[in-house]
Length: 256
Image (cartoon, rainbow, N blue to C red):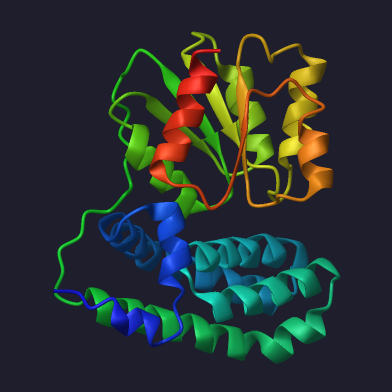
């Protein structure tokens, strides 16, 4: 049996993570997803650091920060956030000087997660097989873990189409010819093209009536909330959310 105290005594904020994932089985499956993808993420970070590509480094470290926050890796999230800020400023010196420390904390969390999950058989939350449902929902979020979490909840009822940033979402919408997408869940803070740019695209192309939109965001600032509600969105849910929260929002959005 897995001992959650191993995580807690090593500084993992499991309690706040469960506000999102609801119960330990979902948390454990998401932790397993993190282990499956973090190696490639680390390799991309190393490559962007080595070639001095700060814009792409900022995008990748933002994703690491988001994953760490959702899983309760508080120290790693704080370190990744500082790297994100500095890389957005183009501060290569900071990134190079502090990269090993970031990688050491990342490896510490990897080793801890492996130790915690050791000997367990866990079903990944990845559900990328199209089920040919009559209706689809579009989930736009730069976090792989959030994408997979929402996919796990809805994949039996809807084809869940995933986009990692606003431009991917716009491209998918442009190609939609059968109108199977009946709702969109849209994050606001994403690299490359953010959620507000998608909302502007909807406004310019008069799409809100044909494709209802609800917001999922980790930014609960009054400024962002007020700005989002200047558009005819259906609802907004602030992360961390749980399964019941997101089901309620989808039902409201689809039935609009």
